[in-house]
Length: 148
Image (tube, rainbow, N blue to C red; front, side, top):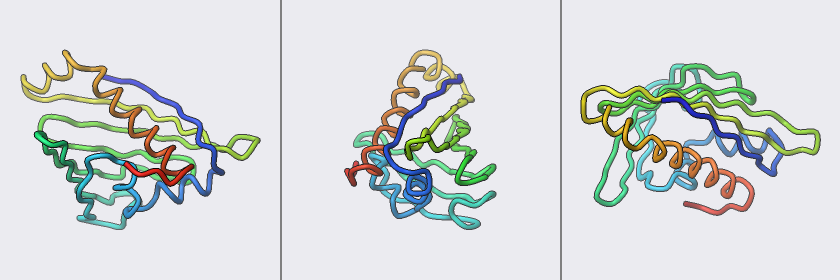
């Protein structure tokens, strides 16, 4: 499954990226995130791995983020793995002429096992909605300091 989203952030590129490239800020815009721990490398650098633990009430989830490629402030490619799901996100950031930032994100999901393949087949829009929700939450946090 593949999809793309784009959002305009009313901040200069450098400010946008500095707010995004912060382990401490993740909980401020990622609803449900209860713990983020670097398990190898340095956060945000190529090859770094971070364990992300989420609590959505009745549903708990642990993801491992791996930075596959970084060319910040313009590009960040990361993978997110959990049981039966592999997600790769290719994020691009570019400055507009009027001092804002365009964030484009392409997501690719791969599912393993019958159960997760069915989830991906039956509920593909839920993955898209969640990605866009986090992008909008980051925008609100970056622009206004609003937290999740």
